[in-house]
Length: 148
Image 1 (tube, one colour):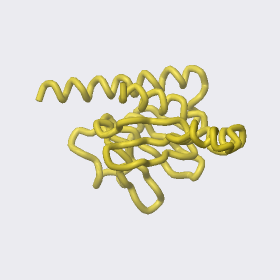
Image 2 (tube, helix red, strand yellow):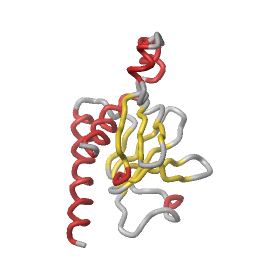
Image 3 (tube, helix red, strand yellow):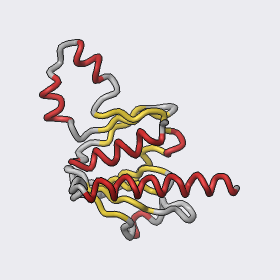
Image 4 (cartoon, rainbow, N blue to C red):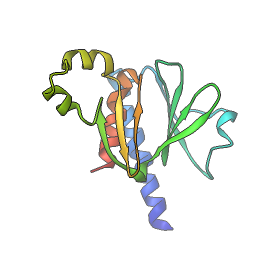
């Protein structure tokens, strides 16, 4: 049990450090660190789960980064996007960005339209976080650090 507590602590610290570093550079205007979660999250919150980052995205929805997973909150639902322990890769924009470029897709246009998109590969699925604004940078840095 002690080992799992230590891992959670490292993830929690890494998450805070990543976002604080980018906040100092002004890249996280849509992020709140250590927010008080609303009561709507109580039904999905796990025992002693820490809500570390609240990220308001361009759609008006919210991504919550906790000490163990990412949640997606819409006006009507809250769903788990991924548990950190299941993330295998995190990609800026698309996992097949290089292949898209080689097929002749306009990279400049993709960057303009999707610069704030992260694609996450888990053991069983691919999921996308979209509309992150400049907060994509610390989110991507954090997620990529998890996979090293």
